[in-house]
Length: 119
Length: 108
Image (cartoon, rainbow over all chains, first blue to last red; front, side):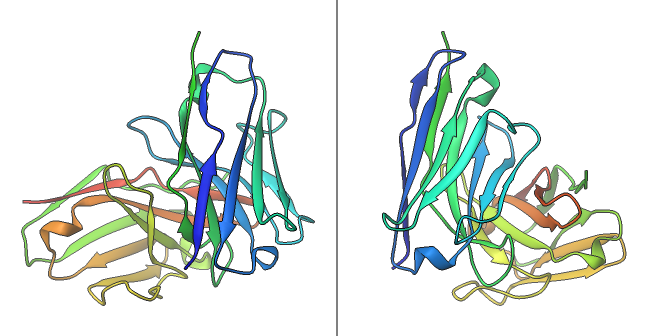
């Protein structure tokens, strides 16, 4: 069974940093593209970042480029998102998601981890 | 950047057919994916590559894509289909994933 479990969320002050993790199991992690998607309270889905299975190809949304960094450790079956210079508008549930079958088809999702940016 | 436009809400009676649209410039040249999200839950992929269904998704869910509009069709709507639905594409020109704004499906 495919499982994606996010962790690392919490309350952080504006300007602060967090590192989110996503532990993957149940599939060959090194072969699949992985993604981070967030959802602000009461809002829609917002794509943040994608990384290829080998980690060679990395893409970030313009809204977070330079502040957020996606990475992965295939030896640990783990995906990461480093969040820097956090703002109140970054408050959201952050999901990791796995591409299945075709590019950007996020077929598996974690349960999400809540990041709250507030003083 | 590429923009996907969805109606904010769609309402349908049980047993009827719901159609949720997703507009984009020449969207027929893109592969469109659709997600269902119920309150407090993570999204679920219900249609990928315009028309294909992942295993476990009922045949009542189907997709089409033509011209500037992609459509998710839900036949014989049930109360359990009430959810937010999002369309999504991979914009190869910008190397960005793009989500539509989402449509709230209400079952009357």
